[in-house]
Amino acid sequence: MNISDVSAASGLPPKTIRYYEEIGLIRPARSTNGYRDFSEADGHKLAFLGRARSLGFSIEDCRILLSLYEDRSRASADVKAVASEHMNRINRKIEELAAMRDTLGDLVKRCKGNDRPDCPIIDDLSGRRSVANG
Amino acid sequence: MNISDVSAASGLPPKTIRYYEEIGLIRPARSTNGYRDFSEADGHKLAFLGRARSLGFSIEDCRILLSLYEDRSRASADVKAVASEHMNRINRKIEELAAMRDTLGDLVKRCKGNDRPDCPIIDDLSGRRSVANG
DNA sequence: ATAAAGCTTCCAGCGGCAGGAAGGTCAACG
DNA sequence: CGTTGACCTTCCTGCCGCTGGAAGCTTTAT
Figure (cartoon, chains in turn red, brown, yellow, purple):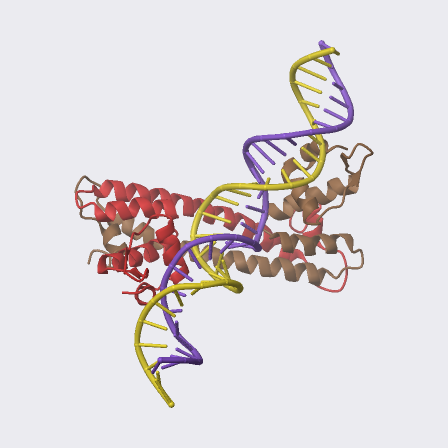
């Protein structure tokens, strides 16, 4: 399998696949012409990586998950630990973003959005903070 | 005002303040010894930037907001447009993260987390997807 | 006089790729 | 057999928004 084949199969761009090799996530064989020669197992790993990345796992998480994927004597507790920690990070991020959204939503709602210059958004950003309707 | 003074006043690290000058967000004066000499207005701009960044606005958004902040004949509609668009991006991001969290939460819940290798998380990532309790 | 603190510039690196240049290789067509 | 064009390779740069560190100046305190 050439890179474009495994790219189509995994959904990952060739650039990404080369990058994953560069950082040691995969180690595809080489043909005599120097082309990468991907095995089925490489394809599976790449699909695994694509899925893990789409769930927001970092590359370092992926490295761990991939090693657990390949370790037939793994403990599911180890997998669960990585996933749980990642989920906690996501939840923290969501809360952070939700707080921003709430503040922004309040400011946007209070801004008349007309051709006049007075604006609660600018007031807030410049430190002249006020409460809603205050 | 030296950089450490305005840093303490605005809460932004000196490195960040230098960076903001480098990309043209602020233009502090210079003393004869080459040190940056920050005015009150510079301090206000930096506080403004810090607050805008903490609400998740991109640097380019900040550039626009700063120009609106300084434009006394601005239309609040222009401010509102920037803020609304940013809020929409945040909401999309939240939905994206919430989808990840939901999937992860399901997988984590279904993983026994013991010393055995069988693991719904690994199964999902490797393409052997199954529905909850399936 | 000296040491410490604070300032300056410049360069490198983070994560996770993407874009592009320069060049080798391969399959198809005439 | 030559040529075109698609595909492959490596290498370098850039994105965002800083952060860390080196090397060298100035100022302040002792």
